[in-house]
Each structure stands twice: as C-alpha cells, then as structure tokens.
Length: 196
Image (cartoon, rainbow, N blue to C red; front, side):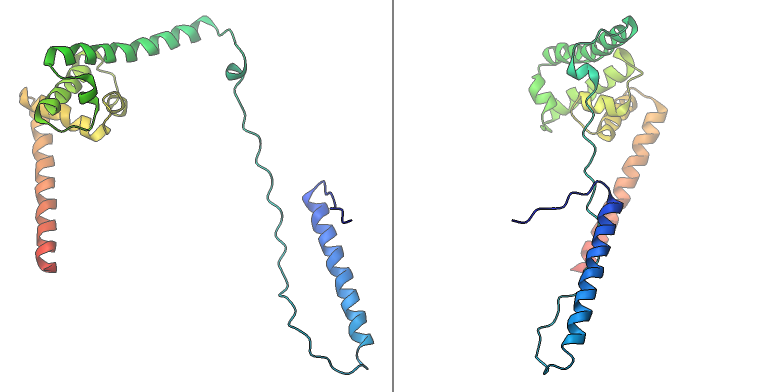
C-alpha cells in the first residue's frame, strides 16, 4: 500500500523533492558504475527531466459578511440611509410607471428592446424628466440602469430633449455627435468602395 506524504509547508515539500532527486541520482550513478563492465544494452530514452512546479496554494475561503449570516441590529443612521436609498429608487420607478400610463406605453415595452418611434420618444421624455426634475443628481450610469439602457444612450436621449427645448449647449452637443457619425459613416463607405 502506498501512502502519500503530508507536507506542512512549501519549503518542506521542496526539501523532500530535492532529497528524492539526490537519492535517484545516487542510485543511477551506482547502477552506471556497476554496468560499465556489462555489455551495452539499448535503453529507451529517459523521460525529460521535469521542472519542479510548486503546488498552488488553496484560495482563501470566501469571507461572508456577518450581516448575511445572522440578523444584526445596525445603528439608526445605517437603517435611515438604506430606507432613503430605497425610496430614491422607488421614486424614480414610480414616476416611470405613472408616466407610462399617461403616455399610453406599457412599462414592459419601455424597458424592453423595442425601438418603435412611440416607445423611443416616451423613453427619451422619461429620461429627460428624471434627470431634470425628479432626481437631478442621478448619475448617467444609474439612470441607464433604471431605464435598462447604456448610459451613453440615455445621455444622448436627454441631450436630444434639451436640444428640442432650445438649450444651446445641447444643440451643440447633438451637432458634434452628428458630425462624428457622418464622418465615420463616410470613412466606412470609402473603405467599402475601395474593397470592391
């Protein structure tokens, strides 16, 4: 029966490996001197000498926060912050649901991938309303997550609405984006024509 050796450290494992290699080398040296007088026998090629690769360490066990294991009683300020954060998100979602009913668009269609003109216009209007009146301090990525879109798409929606309202900065931003898009489209078409 073969029993595996147990090592308590990497250094101990390396030392045992080196000792084993030294014993094997000594045994091979003795066999070579004993067989010098024997007739030559064709031997198979010895396997390549393997480098020593230390055994990877086990990753540390994932640390579970105490508040997930058992009920903890947080200070009042933690509970107040959590309720405020939930209320902020709920305020925006409630506004979206209420305005969906007003605009005649279903909430699922608004959050879905549809690009129908009516739905896109409603989505643009809601993004503009949330960013300007409901919660102006909301970040673009957060607003994007709220409407199930990329933050850049939401930014463009709000800029479109501001441009429609006559905001000169928004109009300049839209014009700059259109110029970049036209330039990219022209470059693509020229490459496509050269390839044909």
